[in-house]
Amino acid sequence: GNSVTQMEGPVTLSEEAFLTINCTYTATGYPSLFWYVQYPGEGLQLLLKATKADDKGSNKGFEATYRKETTSFHLEKGSVQVSDSAVYFCALSSGGSYIPTFGRGTSLIVHP
Amino acid sequence: DTAVSQTPKYLVTQMGNDKSIKCEQNLGHDTMYWYKQDSKKFLKIMFSYNNKELIINETVPNRFSPKSPDKAHLNLHINSLELGDSAVYFCASSQVTYSGNTIYFGEGSWLTVV
Image (cartoon, rainbow over all chains, first blue to last red; front, side, top):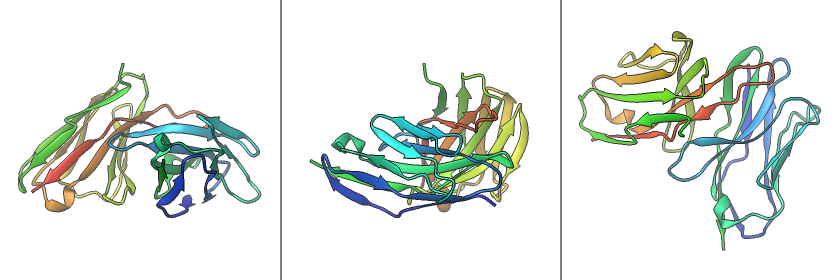
């Protein structure tokens, strides 16, 4: 079956630091990969996605590259801001099951 | 315009009560969902409907009953509330395509059972 593993948090950084949140997956077929972000008190919203190998999704300074050889989709940002403090979820959906599989979420805390 | 809206946002109720959460989407999507998020932020799919038909019904107590009067609405009714039902409940919708299934979430309903 499908599964998503992401690093446990919280990840605590100072403003302007480099961010990496690791995500690896197992899936049947050729999944699409997603990062969602959940700000405090809000629902999840799509941050970026990639639908095939070597695609790079990007949005709001965040990037993630679909790496089929390592089954990974790590989230990166060159310089985080306090406003990036949130919980980040890696997810996949594949043709076998359209229901997305979510990771457990990684909390990011950015200090001024 | 809110794409996926759910009400109420906050709900505090006593054990044993019955409550409902309503959800509407104006995105024209065929598929709607209910997710439960626990205090550790873990997301669990509860139900999925496609064009008003129940597709997914995970191992959820039968005190939870979804109802979809049309494809834009998916309501959740909970009978005989228990302390362990306290959580955030998210409604969501999507349009499944060949390029993957992007989910659009509502803002959540914070349920506290006392």
